[in-house]
Image (cartoon, rainbow over all chains, first blue to last red):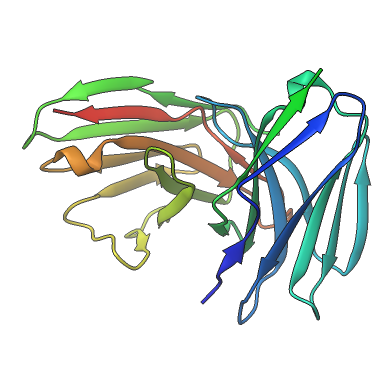
Length: 108
Length: 114
């Protein structure tokens, strides 16, 4: 199985940094993916990690440690528009299994 | 990234009827998938749409309930058959290439079954 756990909700202030953790148990996968989903919209691809380590993409960074079954998404310089659900997923060749998502609320 | 469109964007259907959802991509893609997102839930993979052959279904999903077609590398359909209120959900098409890990979702079809 691939149980994927992430916090239900996090609140942070505009301009701050928030780190969303994701833990998983899996027998094998190609990549660990992060998506952003605004209410009523489709998920938007943010990043993926294939190898252990940190991947940086502008204000967003994602980290993976396969040995620890752990990933995180780091959102820097938070903006109000970053208020959304963030989905952690593991998968191989497009077949993704998603966590329940973390609702991030950015306050002024 | 590919541009993905789905039709219809939303529909309200009666119990016992069927609805076919279309997914069109603006470029040829290796892989196409259908996901479901039930109210307040995360996404669940229904099946992989294989071009020119039968779809590959995930555990809990069967062809009789969710027949899928994929006649070419840019188009696929998902039919939700003999609908019940439990089928009320958002159905999303997803595409990717074997040469890349990036995967994208269509805008979704919001289905309500009464």
